View 1 (cartoon, helix red, strand yellow):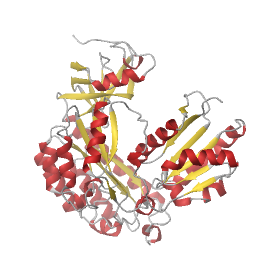
View 2 (cartoon, rainbow, N blue to C red):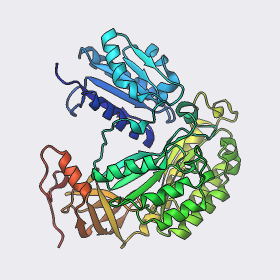
View 3 (tube, rainbow, N blue to C red):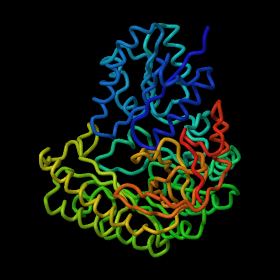
View 4 (cartoon, rainbow, N blue to C red):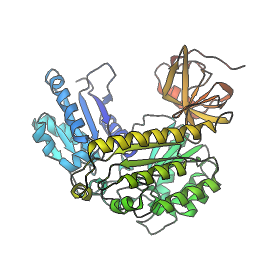
Length: 475
């Protein structure tokens, strides 16, 4: 029998992206191979999110689109996992009976067995666990990038934010031991990885399970001792748990990057209290001030929710004020959407859709204006860019290569002798709200990450022809 193929389709946060790499690894370990872009997979896996707006509609829309495809491809299977699967369970099969497997956030490792059981029994399989039995990082993985990697340091969350359903779907926080995390990072570096992002639902509360409130800062410093690890990032921290020892570790550990993504959600103390966020705007801005005092060039980004129940014009004005005072380099902005099963879903004071939309547009304009002002401060600066695959763009007749600076800003470069995973030093010549342009390349440094990228491709490209672009060695 020919090898069966798969495609994993991911919705939601970075944790879901990381989980999808585990799902792909499980399937490949079971003998499947990734489907090519122009082929119909034998297995389609949806790794779902229950937090994002219209998550249900998006899933069922995709499932409906696949029904005729499945009918025309006998033997094709569809699996649904992730947070929405953990929340809805067998309801998914009731609404879409052509789904073969439903599995939850706590039993990803069961996917290959469930697929085989569904095929043999010719019956949908629904299996959900109420608690995590095996930490996901023990599962095999197929990383999307050979030079960047996610490293999960914890799963679950102990917070009780009224708008969030994650704790009920991911469970209470579970922390990995530091030695286990560091061993994984060392193995990744040996495999060509230059940059790791430490992941947790509340990454800076790491250590709560084994009683060390300074564990996260210690972990950052320990990552600084790993030879060959050039960049360390983390997401997402909670302002409540953001302590000065973490700021000191960020400032004093050279490979911890000068970037911070810290969700704000609202600039109104009244709304923050209703959200049960356990900090207030003054504390949030105080953290940012201390980060910038220790790391002057830090780029800070955030999340903001507009239209939370009971939000008034004055509450919204306070949010705009905090956004301006914080000088964010960027922000993910969201219109509040009611999520069944959360306390906020039953709150009074629903804000009309028209008002939410109008506030959202105003917030987006302020965010863009602030981010553009911050990006203009980068003009003339020399930045180190880790070249990325898939972030390039066409700019007139120029096919640019792109990547991320140390502060995580997106930088578009002139074509040069660099592969994805290599590091380019360049001078910033133009600033836009959401990216920088660097037309003056100073140097190109080949790296083990670039070697790993090249080795992954069946037909390695000659040096100087990254992503199919013509090489142009700078004078």
